[in-house]
Length: 205
Image (cartoon, rainbow, N blue to C red):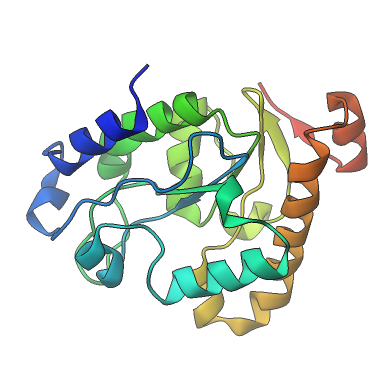
């Protein structure tokens, strides 16, 4: 199993797809190897592309505020993306690009072993499904649902960028993260069957 620093070094030199031509800086994951929660975004934006760090733009500021309001310490969170390089302006990651990057996400999950995984947006949901051999569906259909798959709780969520575009979703977005906060605490102390029952978890293979 590769360490996170070794994985980041490989990402910085990645040439697996055409996104290498549009990027300024590849974006590695960020957070501790003991993080309880992994949050997966869709792709780096302009600010992330400049700084080489995930969630440092407007979406990141909204996410930070939501984590703080939900009493989720940043020290317990690992941030990453479905693809590591910025797509062309206005484009979302292609399936081929998500597949090319999926080994990096798989290695991060194996290195961190998060108890709760939050894929935000359709690209992140597809990326996680690629790894877990599961079609979770679209974010508009499953946001806020909780799944148990491959020894992790999966809580799909809208991407903060979608909340910025449509503030009507902000209340549900915040409520979902409050549930994630409580779930992350409960998984440390409660047995699996109790969590499945209390959170109406869908167990998938």
